[in-house]
Length: 491
Ligand code: 16G
Ligand code: ZN
Image 1 (tube, rainbow, N blue to C red):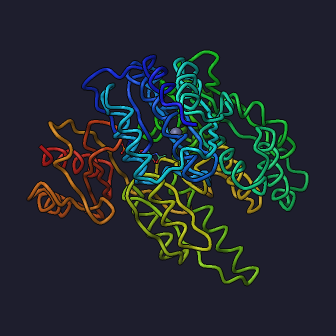
Image 2: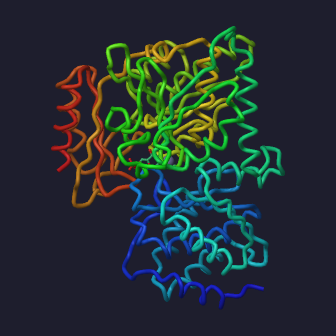
Image 3: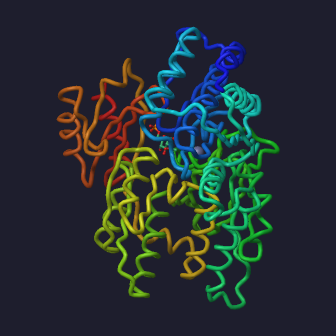
């Protein structure tokens, strides 16, 4: 029987600071760690309800991805390893923001609204990143699960995609893979070794790759996994967490947004390097050319490599499956053009956030999706993305320069603008056009007209209290000045 006294008793150990309001956004809750104790506990409770409702295992991941070490966050993972359903995101926000004395009532309201059978068993699996606050927070989640009588398994340190994998395995009777870390390593490595066996690398030396692990969980897991695929690929790890701080001056987000190499990595000319983010669900590649110039290979170019490879493979074997590439407004205009005009692959644009891309991708026999920031593919897994990229480069005998030369990125610039209330900006057309405030889109249109090959948009961030501005044009100077002018129009 449900023992709600246990919920009351445990919740007294995880008091919500009154007045604090948080929102379950594109990547779950994210905030300074000191605000999150009650959120973790309540997400443990909510995971139990979702598990009872779906009669499946639900995942809870404690991480704040590429945010600074002082932050933390939490997100729930749905039965097939997917993002939490939208209606439950709202429940998550309501439950988290309920004042202490209202919490139990809100919990019961959700349970009623969703027709949860409280007698049903519940099972929750938990993972966490390497942040100092994460271990304590998984304990808060466990308190929430236990308070509602749920069973749980704590996997401890995992990358975000590894937790998604575990949830999927738990709910598919082992058909997808074994729900163990060993099972994950085996599944990915075997696929990689199998693929690269066909590469004609006669006498070629073993491939090697330099990996910046953002001083995060990716380093630990890649080190554990390395020997499973080391016959095909040798990885050299940098920013492995032994010296530097998580995500500080390194990692995929830093490299992409600053368009420069991470600190703490020695780059040799013309050699492939990549960066993960703090929870290893994003990846970008880059290299220094013979003149020492830095070249970034972002999510758009990764999507292009993977989708072109698949398209050619389908032609070769005469298989008539439909393939689509899903991008966001941030996709470089050159990538969209190349995919549509050269590769003849249909391209679709959705709102920012993996769940939107994922949803659209499911409409195709083969859906490839990437955000420009390196978040993409089937689960958004930096390790599996790295292995598939390495396999394709090997099979096609492509160097990193040849890959980079598929198309030339249009120069672009991103800016953040602080405004009093970012919600006054609303958008349409997959965030490419502003609907409100009135006049803003017209102002942007006028600015864009002043530059060649130009495009610009603004959107309220889903993860920070700011508005983001994106601009691209035929030269870096033009992109910079367009972005600047648009940011002034936002005030
Ligand atoms: C979240 C999203 C990421 C997106 C980013 C945009 C997931 C798992 N993560 O991190 O895909 O690029 O938000 O942030 O969906 P923004 O709204 O602050 O620009
Ligand atoms: Zn991440």
